[in-house]
Structures are given as C-alpha cells and as structure tokens.
Length: 86
Image (cartoon, rainbow, N blue to C red; front, side, top):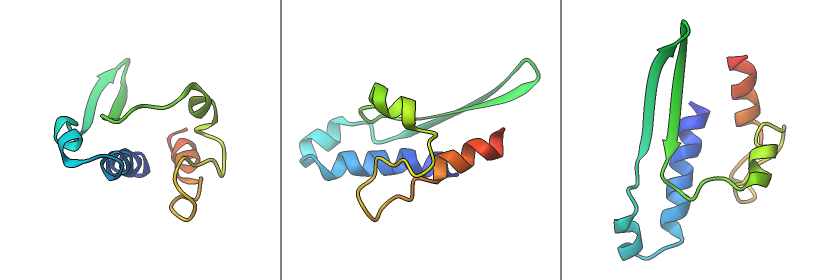
C-alpha cells in the first residue's frame, strides 16, 4: 500500500509544480501490473512522473530516507515495505 501511495504522491507533486496545460499533457495515472513468473507473484507499480535519480535509487530502501518535503514523509514506508516482502 505504501508503494502505491508514493506513486500517487509523485503525481500530485508533479501537478502542483505546473500549470493546467502541462498537467493536461501528463497522463496522471498509476499503472499496476501483476503476473506469475517461476511460481512467484510479481507486482509492478509505476507512476508516470519524472522517475528517480541514480542517487535516489541507491538510497530508496534506507531507513529515514525520503524525497518528500519536511513534514510529509517519515522515511520509513519503503524500508518497512521491503522488510514485509522479504
């Protein structure tokens, strides 16, 4: 659930930075795909925002790491989601 919430937050953050014409061009959607591979369920969640920098990709599972503004993120969600999945 946290991963889905982060995808929605990314779209909302994108929309808050641009005028309506730019937002209208953005797809404003989150895509969820699931499939079975090698007897394992795989779930893919993607937003259509700008993506993550390489630096963010290296830190994304660190405790207390957040890309959100102060007061909007705890930095625990993705780290906890990873622990649950593992």
